[in-house]
Length: 174
Image 1 (cartoon, rainbow, N blue to C red):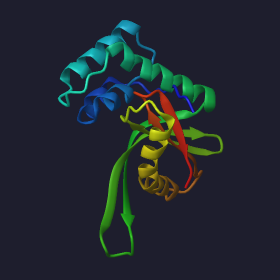
Image 2 (cartoon, rainbow, N blue to C red; image 1 turned 60 degrees about the vertical axis):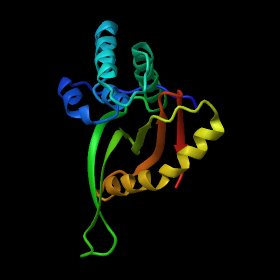
Image 3 (cartoon, rainbow, N blue to C red; image 1 turned 90 degrees about the vertical axis):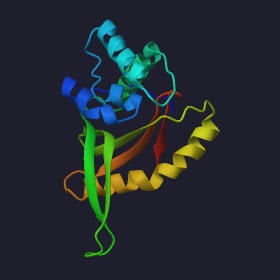
Image 4 (cartoon, helix red, strand yellow; image 1 turned 30 degrees about the vertical axis):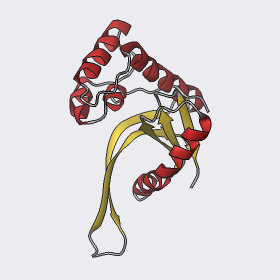
C-alpha cells in the first residue's frame, strides 16, 4: 500500500493550479525532469505562499512528488498521465439541473482502461486511520469515474487515493 510517482510538465500548470492546496500545486506540474534545485525552489515558493498555516519541508514535498512518480511508473509502466482534469457531470433525472463539478487530480491512461488518482492531505501515520478516512471519498471517486466512463472508450478500472504526506496510496473499490 506504499506509494510513489507522477509526471506531466508545464510551467503554465503551476500558475493555473495556484488555487489548489500546496501539495496539489506542486504535484500538478511536477515532471521530475527539472534539476533538484529547481524543484526544491518551486516547492519553497509554494510553501512560503501557503496561507493555511500547515508547514511542510520543501525537501519532503519534492520527495512526495518523487515517490508518487515512482509508484505510478512501477505499477502502470508506460501510462499516459493527465493531471488536473476538470469534470462536470449532470446528476439525477433530466431537467433537475443538478450538476457535479470537480477536478480529477491524476488520470492515468493505460492499455486496458483508466486509473483515477485523487490526492489527499490527511497525514495520519496509521493504516487504520487512513483507511477509515479514505472511505468518505468513495462517492467522489465514483462520480469522477462516471464522468470519465460517460465519454465512452476505455472504462475507469482502478480508483486510488494518494495520501502524499503520509506516504501511502490506497486502492478503493466501488
